[in-house]
Picture 1 (cartoon, rainbow, N blue to C red):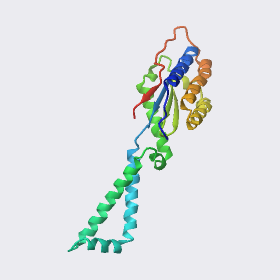
Picture 2: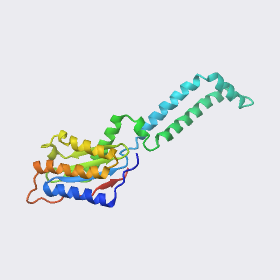
Picture 3: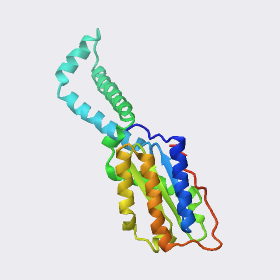
Picture 4: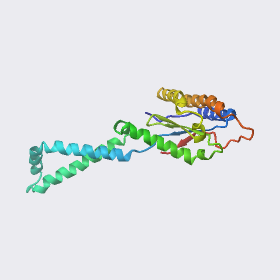
Length: 224
């Protein structure tokens, strides 16, 4: 999946949508996009080691041929030459597989989906905390988080919102946003998702007389 691109006009519309939500409710809306929520290095290395082990087992099945080939490479072949070949070739195979797993998007095919889901959720929570969303006066911060390579979206709401709005109430908004991303309309889908939450937040968290904008409305593009 190619990285999602947002034009200046699309960014303005998304920011305007967030500002609109905050004009009709006391909610504080954040939007963030990240290329990839994790490098999944541990899972990729484990996959590579398993691949190397499988290669080693297969190579053992061709031991006679390998022994004959290695023996022809030396004038005075020693027993350790065979052992060295198995060790060196296995390490090479592990390295090649690890390089392959680092091709963008390949990790999504080898890393279990639960691990990917947890990684995206954890990265969204980190941004939610670092952005200061957990420090709003009435705990009404909400984050729309898009992780591009994983093709996943997280909607993180603070405890003030969760006390009145059930997680299932965000399901349609979440599914519609995911559908838009898969259709290549990420910016349009994010704008609509933010606007759709205005009704929910406006119902449960009407604007107060002393309400202030506690968080910036602009979309944030995060580094990996």
